[in-house]
Length: 80
Image (cartoon, rainbow, N blue to C red; front, side, top):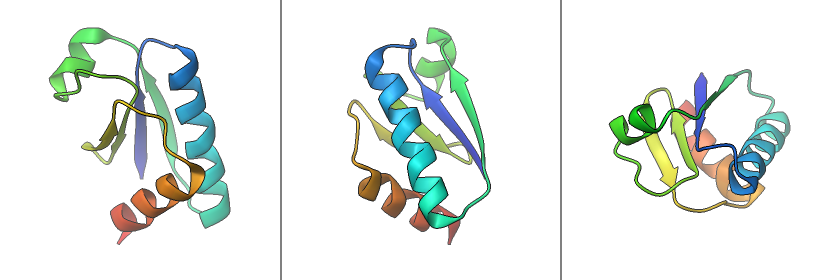
């Protein structure tokens, strides 16, 4: 599983990365997390409001920082 955190490196982006790592740990999933800070690349995913979360090249969230439980649900759905 490849997960990308989209955003310029702001606090919300850092918080999204943190809750994503927590959710992965709770689920026991192995994934690669990449940070994407390049605006043309972010826009290429159709994300106009950061932070964004991409799982295996599919945008699953944008414009907010979810809870760990919400990310866990998104990752569980993406893994199945």
